[in-house]
Image (cartoon, rainbow, N blue to C red; front, top):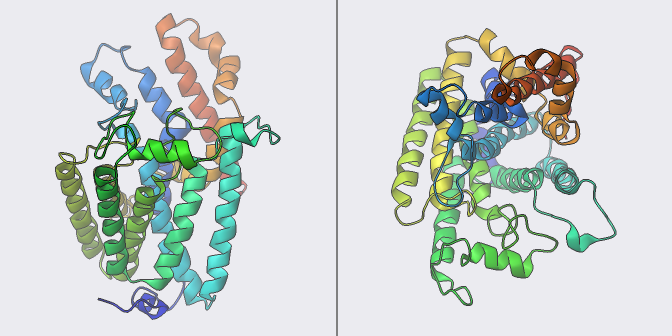
Amino acid sequence: MEAPSVVVKKEVRPSSSPGRLASIDALRGFDMLMIAGGGQFIATLGGKTGISFIDAVAAQFEHPAWNGFTFYDFIFPLFLFLAGTSLAFSVTGGLAKGIPPSVIRNKVFKRMLILIALGILDKNAPMDIFDPAHIRYGSVLGRIGLATFISAILYMKFGTNQRLYIGVGILVAYYLTLILVPVPGFGSGDLTFEGNLVGWIDRNFMPGILKQGTYDELALLTQFPALCLTLFGTVAGDVLLRENRGNSKIGKLLLFASTGISIGILWNFAFPINKHLWSSSFIMLTSGMAFAMLALFYWIIDVKGFQKWAFFFRVIGLNSLVIYLAVRFVDFNESSRLLFAGIYKHAPENWHEVYNALGGFVLVWLFLYFLYRHKIFVKV
């Protein structure tokens, strides 16, 4: 096993700062597309066309009530994974420029605090700061900030294999904890909505309000398995940085993909795939899917050189934070209604929501394209 020191990173650190990969920006843009209106548009097509295939695709954009999996469950895990992939590039580049690890750590720590604050604002606006007991503290942005900060520390201290072992170890420990630790009134191994350990810890130790009332999927215990997605993302980043040949990179990414998906499916029989609990099987399945998606985008865009088609996604991916907050605070669907309702009102009424969702997404993309043309890229 490699020695836990920063020296290990010399294996993946080129002589100069690593360049930005178009495939990572495009895949992040594809992911944000689902959040910024694309997913809503696809969901509204359900039951409209009479085509069973389209209805089946639309059904993939609704979350299961408890156990189970749809493609929509993959969206946030993919973003956490890509945060780790990008982290590998940024930290490696910083170290190559001679930036001390302490400076990088402090920068990522400040970024975490900013994301936590923005996440609280996002989940509670309009927020009554004088009533902290009724504020929801768990958030998507906060989870990204925390996972990225811890992953950065581990990235600068441990090698690729060690981080992989740490991630798998966390998932095994999480599984054993939920199976073996008894919950008052329910006993041990209860993975139901009412009796799981995650909910009990949230109810007893998480301040503020919980999204689901009895638990919050973005609160305390689920931070641990979610972190593993970002750790596995750093492993993918190392593959892209370390391997010299494109085919070798793709081969390793696909090996991780098939392994993760297989373990996730098999683990499902003992620990059901469940996004609410961020179950270990869910993490393995989605991390495997993320490796596969990254391999596909990297092969098409960076190896084969087909980049023009990805421009649509890159415009979104380069300003992911902006669009995440924009769709929360700007009502693009209402703007779509005001601009386009005079046109789509002549269509059958059950199609109005489809056209309105499409119009809203077009406005979102044009807004991001305006920022892109003016070279405005907001980062924290």
